[in-house]
Image 1: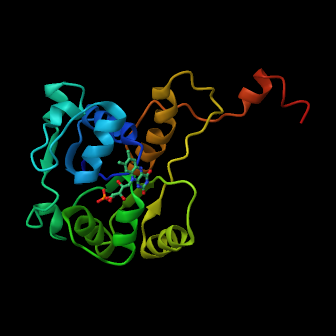
Image 2 (image 1 turned 30 degrees about the vertical axis):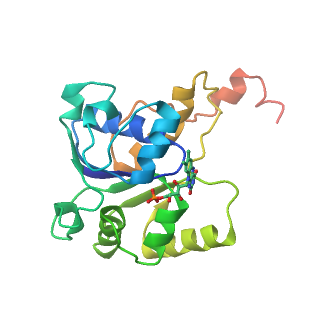
Length: 208
Ligand SMILES: Cc1cc2nc3c(=O)[nH]c(=O)nc-3n(C[C@H](O)[C@H](O)[C@H](O)COP(=O)(O)O)c2cc1C
């Protein structure tokens, strides 16, 4: 399996860290690109300091060098990277978290950096493109851009965790989103599935 994971400057960098770890653990090869604003959000949210133009991928894997070996980082301005070309097949691209700025550039075909270009390529080659968008509230511009990319073939997976399995930690909340991403990439995970008996256990089903 061969994926592209791009991190942009939205909030929600923990989603990216968990996804990268799980893809590496699943033995996938992952091309990683961070925008400069992604590094700002990453530092603010996790304390991890990275240079977008020379990222130390082991920091994205909690210092685990073996996992980091599955990741290959590309500079956001390296428009000559293999992932900028439609001739390089992959099994899916995820932009997580996806800022409204990057969403807008993709929606309007503005391929001014490697992230937007690789996304543009995924759309034209009809490859899987998952946009894990994050903003609140959403303006009409955001909503229209989401519609545009959806019509072009992307899947907007707005970062909405679920709580019906009563997550106890931030990591468990984050995983409710990451597991849905893995589902769409076709990567097996140990996601807990809704079975319906949760309601029975809470003695709510019979009353409903
Ligand atoms: C701490 C922090 C949190 C941010 N959160 C969001 C967000 O949730 N959604 C968003 O669209 N932009 C957010 N931004 C703004 C983007 O980083 C900014 O628009 C940036 O230019 C996006 O560039 P990029 O898409 O190239 O990464 C945030 C910025 C900072 C510093």
